[in-house]
Image (cartoon, rainbow, N blue to C red):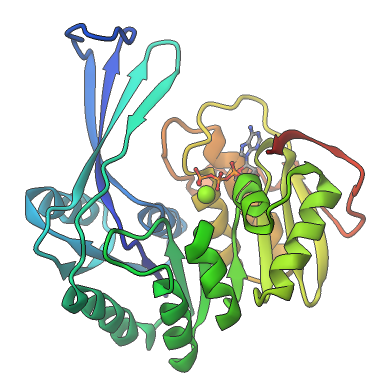
Length: 315
Ligand SMILES: Nc1ncnc2c1ncn2[C@@H]1O[C@H](COP(=O)(O)OP(=O)(O)OP(=O)(O)O)[C@@H](O)[C@H]1O
Ligand SMILES: [Mg+2]
C-alpha cells in the first residue's frame, strides 16, 4: 500500500472562459470540480495503476466534505483528519487558447491538536504502508520542521518515505534522511541557492541534497527529463513526447510511477519518466492509467550528459 499525505488539500474549481478581461463579468462556458493536492494526485495515479493507496487529508467544512465525496466516487480511499477550518477552494480560469490562470487560497490554519491528529493518523496507517509519500506545501500553523517530524516517525514505524516539497520544509527534513526527495528544477535550484543551466548542474545540486541527508534524489527537469542520484548510482532518463497538453501534475504522476515500480534504481526511474511523459499528454491534472504509458519511448542511461544545456533552466 502507498500512503499519501497532503497537509493542505484543496477543492479545485475550473471555469472555462473565452478570454480573461480585467474588471469584466466573464461568462464561463464550462465548469468542473476536482479534488486537489499533490498527494491526492499521487494517490490518483497509484489507484489508476491498480495499486492500493490511502490518502491522508485534513478536511473541514463543506469543501472538505466535497473533496472526500469526489475521491470516494473515484474509488480512492481517504483517511480524513477532521479540522475546524474549511478546506481551501482554489480557482482556475482556463482560456480557450490554453492559458491557465490560478488563484490558490491559503487554506485553514491547523491547531496543535489537529497537527498531532494528522501525525497520529499517518502513524496508525503506516503499519500497512510500503511507502509514505508526503507532498506539497504546509498549511498555516505547521512549522517548517513538520515534515522532518513525519520522516522521523515514518522511519521509526519501519516505513520508507518520499518527500515532494520545497523551501524550508524540504531543507529542514533532509537531516532525517528521507528515502527519496523529488524536487523539480526550480525547487532544486532554490534548495542549493544556485541556478541550474545544464544537466551537470542538476547532478551536482542533487549530490548536495544527498550530502544534507536525502538518501536519493529524483530530480524532475520538465522537458529535459529526469535524474536519479542515489547511493547505488546516478541515472538520467528522458521520454519522447509528441504533443504536450498540460504539465500540471506531471511531477506527481512521476513520483507515483517511481514508487509503484519499487522506488529505487533505474527501473523505477524509467517508470517515473514514463508516467511524467504520459501525464503531459493528458489534459489538466489528469493522471495516466497503464494504457496511457509508452515504455518504448523511454531511455535510461548511466552516461549522464553533464554538459547538456537545459531547455528549461532554473533561475
Ligand atoms: N514539456 C515536457 N515535455 C516532455 N516531458 C515533460 C514535459 N514536462 C514534464 N515532463 C515530464 O514530466 C516530469 C515531471 O515534470 P516536472 O519536472 O515539470 O514536474 P513538477 O514541476 O514537479 O510538476 P508538478 O509539481 O506540477 O506535478 C518530467 O521529468 C518529464 O518526464
Ligand atoms: Mg512538483
